Length: 347
View 1: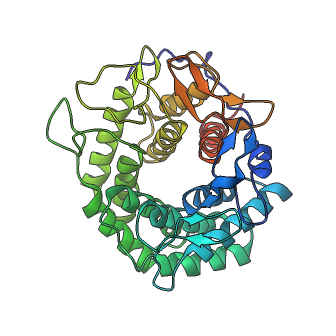
View 2 (view 1 turned 135 degrees about the horizontal axis):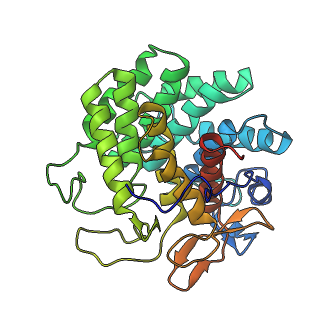
């Protein structure tokens, strides 16, 4: 993949700020939505977001008091969302009341991602222990949906990396490899689905993670090839031009909007993993492009985060950003900057 980025022009990822995430958070959890930088409390909270909080806080080196507080609240929320059989609820209202039934949709997969990351990376032994207990409970379930299984696989890969031979984590990875799908045969459209939709890079990342853990070289190779195709497909004029909220098919025009920050974060995560497996590929450039997208090198030529608040903007329209700074977008920014500073440390 050709990129206009050079070593001299490489964007430096700013230090991730958790201040805005802290302002969105109260005693129950992190509010899902915001109006500009102000939380919209009436929309309540969701497990999808709290699992993401658990991922980014567990990744953060040398956590400060705010990061530690956010991690503990996220862990409590994700644990409380889980049923005795390992299925998960997603919605809590602003008064702290759970809504809806337990299930194995995306929130289940993301909860395993968060729990697995905390079990492997938290600096606190008590957090690691509790997270592992509930990861193992959640790992009893399976989902028929590829993305839910992909998210679960990312958490399972964290557990296996820290605890080689962990049985339930390896079982999740094996089943995820069968559910996520495989690289297609078409040279122009090798994607395993007729359209790109959401969190697309999580699919090849989970293939790479599962292939490494299970020692399945073909699965790793297929995941790397699919990710390289996706990175090329999501790049236009030397910058990321992401699949919009409505998805993208083989003949859809581009650029297209609304582009979502979570797509950029998923791509950065996948490229960061690929860089550890296949050094020398386009992966470092992929992470650099993801950082640059937030810093204004994108289809709208617009900054996609607010340096004053530390919040990420909710989406990119043709005329610039949606200025609301919700939880998902803010964590997408934090996650991308974390990967940027880890893979491409400041000079």
